[in-house]
Image (cartoon, rainbow, N blue to C red; front, side):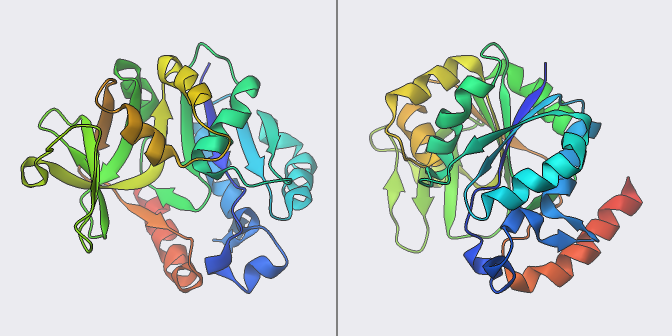
Length: 247
């Protein structure tokens, strides 16, 4: 069974004032909420079970899914209204809602892309975790070796490097940006229980990348847009329209 989690619990502060009255997941692009776009992509890719975590205006998301009969999917709610658990803590809290024998695809609600989610999910079966990455300009990069296995992280502005591997040579690494879409396999999921209640998923990957195969999946023709900022909404309409024409 293909299963996925949508991160929809964020406060959406970069989308204010829209998120003063609605959650980020229900901000509309192309006439539909961001959550709709991700759910429809997952459904079209054969995913059957989807867990959505909620915090900010949680009841609006619950009502929206209920009004739409969960779009014919097995959609479950992971309630974080009492405390935001960050990306890693959110996955850990939701684990009981998943089939423990199948990988979980994680997808930020504010990401639009042309990624074939079914192919990504199938490809991920060869690794403990698979991170969709791209060659784009940013301040923070994940570091991958020639086999595209995660070896660390760096901030190019500050020069900070984080890695469980001593003396990792940043210059010899492939520096790639994380997309907010990744797949975690069952063996790796069990290790989440070793972490605190709140933690970032990248911190988790960096802790274990010297002992587990955490793979970077770099799609050559990747088109991806983070719709997390108010100034990106107009561009998102055009981006979405272009994607739909190509499909």
